Image (cartoon, rainbow, N blue to C red; front, top):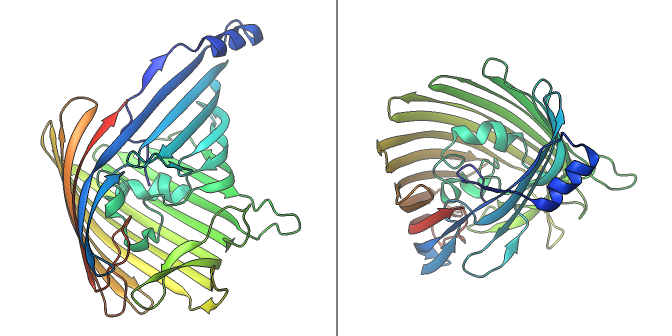
Length: 370
């Protein structure tokens, strides 16, 4: 999954939008931004189903996407806003519905309210203190992205609020409707988050709750991929999901140190393919990470995570180096290693399960932002 954190926009005048704004309000100002990112490369995995895998990649750090973002000045510090993002694979051309789209209102004094297909509070408040939500990206997610720090899923039918900053303190929340008649709580979700930034210090915490996940096709979320107690995974319908996360980082010159903790619980599980019941699952993730701006053009990053499951556990470590070739283009190399406990699947995020307890990824790529 990807985010728009590194996008460099190109602004242009949209004649049709400007004309509509002039007709409704001669003093209103409208603008549209076109931006996006292409991320592609090559990767080697030592074990995928018992075999080494060589593959072309799209989104080893950030998933490729394009986006249109716009606003209209309503006066008094308020504006109407919209965002339309669409993900795609640079290697196959396949399109993905893994990016946000929304419309809403924003006020300097009161904050922002948006409606649409959106990131939850885990992404907005907790993920930035993890490496997967910062420089590391996709492959650095916690096992199965169990806490959604890599935004593997977005909330459909959602209403979202984000406050302005009060002395570095920001709060927000989201509610996603089930959209099912007579089943208000079946496949709905809600989340809350808070963050604080003061100079070199940044901290964030969030909570996500979902009912009846995957139970309907019109609700907040699809089924979630979880380990099945052996060295494989399955798509699970979830009666109740709760995810909590908190963490902080601190910059000391060019070095930023961080630590994060999260816990995810999934109860009332049913195999989406067979209809069979499955045991509840829970995960506690403990991460330490570091980012070092070695040179203006070279960023080094690394992390270690220990994940404790119901009856299984995972160790995961990763290193990454990204070199700026220009303001918009960088090249990177990275490696991620995961070791699972006996009978647990080793699965680096975006890969297929290993046949054993270990999986190693070595990759390189190039990103261009426009």
